[in-house]
Length: 304
Image (cartoon, rainbow, N blue to C red; front, side, top):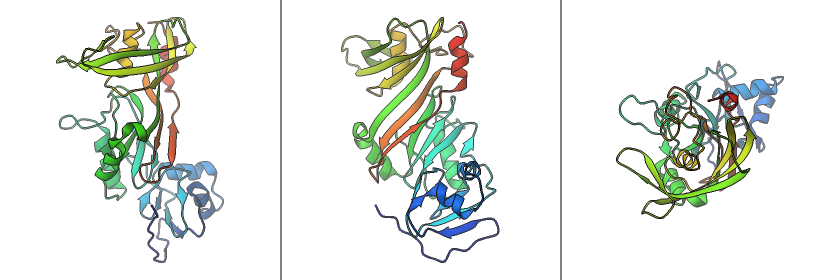
């Protein structure tokens, strides 16, 4: 879909540099060119803190593609907004979608008044950055699971992405610390899952009317009493990884619901580190990754 540009003559204001793009390129390179002499890290920091808009839309991704005629506004001293706080970090944003790295303890959607959730946080970010849109959930993560999520900025884009989710999504991978020593370097867990009135997902090795679910796992590092795993979702059921790891006797560390219940204060060691999907408008294959949380290393080598 071609972009529409406002060809008014760009003017610098007291706090911003405004430039028109003369030839296609990448946003980070353009920012560094406009602010002659600025370091690459400083330019990245300005982007990360919401200091750059393209055609009046905040852009934070260093490789965001610029077309001829785009109007770019750069504020050197942009104040950090809610887009980069202790609850989440914006990894990518354009006019159609936003990808975030959610922290543990944040819900995907509101549940009751005053709940800490990504939709409300993103709606606040859109308001602060003068964007006329709201966040629409495309998929979910458990409250106690951290990691990558994508939200749509309109109902139309949301419906386009969710109508054929299996074609939209390319890859979703998690990293987890689990209890025990793995007997094999890799494996696959399959079962049928269904909710109960007790708000717990139960698993059956045979079709009992539940939803079929499959999870692949791979051993990354083996400690004395715990294991670090990569996990690949072949389906996307509620609590799937947590239930499947408990099924094979290796519950996720810190999961008091399906694992050990004698340490309720510990953080759950499950993180969505990779997300890849087809862009709903451009069709481009986008892939995002985040580092393994630091506390996973501590949890891996601590004895239960």
